[in-house]
Length: 323
View 1 (cartoon, one colour):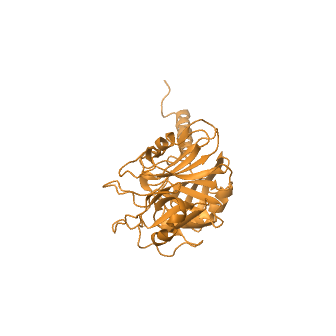
View 2: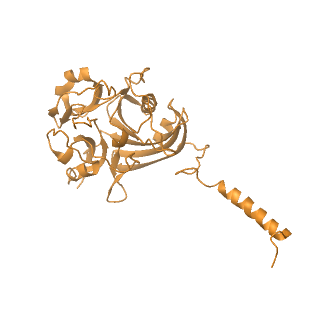
View 3: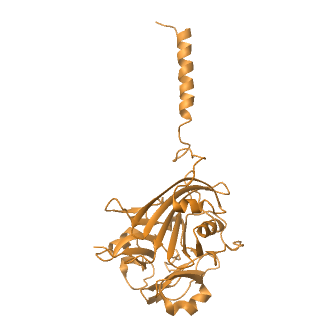
């Protein structure tokens, strides 16, 4: 029997150790491979986001068309504060023939039922039909978890289901603005005071939270609101009113995505060319569901922090006129 301390055996074990150490360098440190710090964004929106004051570096970006007038861009980035983020940007061209944005409600009922909730995928089942194919859904307004009351107003196809805001001094980030579409299909974001004057001219509306972009500028002070990082859903639109963006940000998942602050989102929406942008319900509610373009299924695109789809009080849906 060859002795373990022979020169040949020592050489073998030295080589084995060296090979093991070298191979470890290729292993991931978390759920993702070690980022490529030399990577340059390749997509249109990736290149735009890279210019945002809140973005330090982009590690990966991909894009694909969901339907005519609707596309999705997914970006893995590091913020200027060295936080890792995965964001999912839905872009909607409102000038596309046959395309429509609308408020989704549980069971597609035109009434406000306190406590009624459904997952985005379940809401789709009640809406999707020939001539009105659902291609994308995001969650919308906040609600009071103690009693199920929706925080903001609700308009559906010109019908006002609720015209009040339920503000709470302990939740100052909620029930302070709205996102809607007027009867010409143009998007609008404003505060609660302006809602009163505009309400008769709004076709579809849900409440929203902190306004992170006003007239193309990020507000300088968010001190009155939460300073914690959370999963987010933010909506915005361009000055001509032709393009709407939803950005879903994953969070509360170490090594995958930390979640964003308000000013960080405002800077990104500004980089996309938005003029106004506001925060929608986040946390485990932050969800993007799409009709997958290469498979006949609806898919949750982001990693929701609950680990699965959460039932929500209302949504924004994108439909197209397809058989």
